[in-house]
Amino acid sequence: MKLVSKILLLLSCLGIGCFSCSNLTNKEAEAHQTPPTNIILLMGDDHGWEETGYGGHPFIKTPVLDQMAGGGLILDKFYSAHPSCSPTRGSIITGRHPNRYGTFAPGWSIRPEEVSIAHLLKEAGYTTAHFGKWHLGPVKAGSPTNPGAMGFDTWVSHDNFFEMNPTLSHNGAAPEKIVGEGSEVIIDKAISFINQNTSSSSPFFIVVWFGSPHEPYQALPTDLALYENLPDSLANQYVRLTSLTSGERVERPLDSVLQERFAEITAMDRAIGKLRNHLKTKDLQDNTMVWYCGDNGIPSSGLYHSSLHGLKGTVYEGGTRVPGIIEWPKIVQAPIRSAMNAVTTDIFPTLCELVGLELPNRPMDGVSLLPLIKGEQVERAQPIHFWNFDTRHLAKDTAYIDVEKQKGTTPLVKKLRGAYTRNFQNFRHTSISPEDFLGERAILDDNYKLIIDEQKGQEVKELYDIREDPGEKKNLIAQNPTIAIRLEKQMKDWQQSVLESLLERDYEKSNK
Image (cartoon, rainbow, N blue to C red; front, side):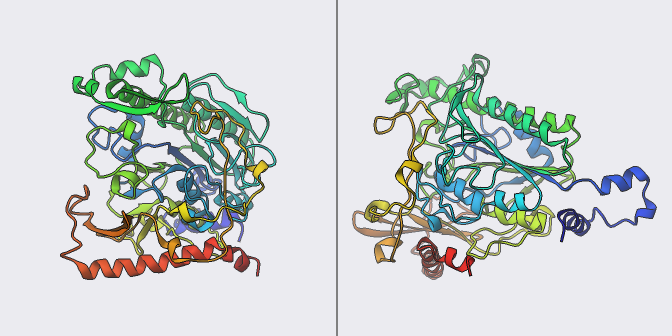
């Protein structure tokens, strides 16, 4: 079925194309034959669930996200598939948990055999582009996991995060410094792409992954001025983060650190507003889906009296619950706040169902949220899994990708192992051992969340009713052993499936 026919069929199911053409004016009939929906995915870097105005934060100003929330679909129980950046990005690109292809932690690359959502949308007729943080492998030419290899027609991207005046690579060329506030720089690139693409008849798919508000923090004076009057008590608290001058870890008062972090969030919000205004000017806003989310929870350097337990890097709510908003005026015509659990792996199958594409022939961990978007679903059909794979016992003698191809080129402020660039890694896994099932892990059904971890040689289990206790304060493991046993069995079965994927067996199935 042709792409336009698929979209028109979908719109008919949504109640948009159900009128007889004879009853429409020429202009109305033309509107029902408009090109397929454009799709824009936006993601903040280390942007936690509570850090928005609409989320009730006492200080942070996000008027644009608030406006999107005021007219769109708020995914109030939205999660990152992993509590850190590279893995979560992989989950969006593939619709699969990152442990299936060895993207265990920041700096672990994706595998070239993974099917990307950009691959599928490109084949379906979309023009595709990536702007900003990539972090799934080097963005340079010749990298088998750069955005181009993963299905993007064009990219202006960075291997990792960036601040103001970022140094980015355009389609794999040598990195070039671009003067400007970091979020606005990549939004301007996205706007230029939209301008170039609107002359063609093809819809577009754009992924914008911001470098903000990841530390080290850097902001414009006008944005900093908005947060000059934070509580005096914060000056007596100190946190460790990266120095903008040396790239080394330093200790600083929390008041000035939060001032910079909050200012970065406001700048990112403003850049999103610039994009939305451009869509409106181009008469594209009504039929463009804009989906915003964070990639993991708040780091220790950005924490201010969170009601959630845990931080970035943990599978607790504070590490994985993130902002989620879908704005699509043509379909979501009234504000909705959804309490259904959803996760970044859901983005892939949602877009596939939207466009009418079949899912790849391999295990998928997300579910389509299109029924939720249409207002037909309030409960999730399957649980969400989180898993910090324990890489300490991992055999690292066989690299999955040539080491030279894994070397990054785009510089950043933060120094690591003596370098200001980032290299990536991924290794072949040849067998499944009992140790492979270890690492902090969790399973979340509609109400209950089971967390298992090994601490000092002992297995520790926690069970929380997330609906009643989102702060994970009351461990119910003793009161509800039957629920814990059921969830643990489900999680173990899922882990087995993930490890089968890690052995590359999914690629064998796909080639049959």
